[in-house]
Image (cartoon, rainbow, N blue to C red):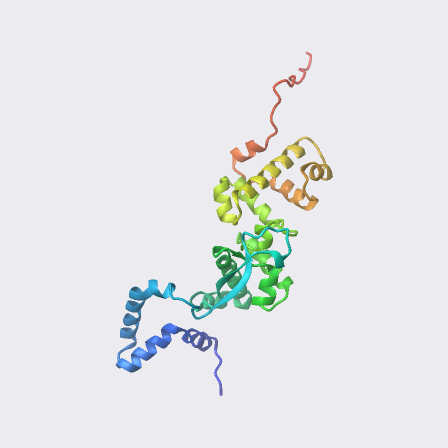
Length: 271
């Protein structure tokens, strides 16, 4: 009879790592206790950790993937865009097993999605939704769209090519930039948090201010979108953010329309 209890399952998965294999070999070869084997392993890590991370070639659980460079503009076809080779960590038992235990397969997929996107971005590359769906996770794009929506609701925005380069109908990252600005963050902080360049952040904020001024002047949704040169869905999101009660006071002040110096005062009621 095979016992497939959950506890034994996680123990078996945790055992399929290099550290347990090393400790087992030390225990068998030197006839020492598990405590002594753990102490030896810790000393090996303390001594050689820097060399492990700099070792040439792929580490266990890693893979190499060719992706579009972050320097590639959004206009040209992908075949004409510069590409680079990045190293992605597909399996990290130390964190993957924790995510799997807490939230199951969905949590593990989202955990890995965030990790590989950040790793590619840090190495100068950008993953696309197609890369994630067909080359890494072997699932449908709609599944990953639901994952990305859930992550963004939790204030986690993985750096994808579509968001960094403003490709497609990606409105949520613009909304996130404005939320951070309303909360009081400066352009440099927002750029670091939202994985955008400062010029893009400034452009989003300036358009948001334009929407605020047009709305205060009494224009309707279609007119605001037309005059601000924005899509109506994005304009609706900006208008909803104007009602955000979490915005700090000096940001609200910046959104007020300027008072013209030559505007005559309102007439006083005659007694």
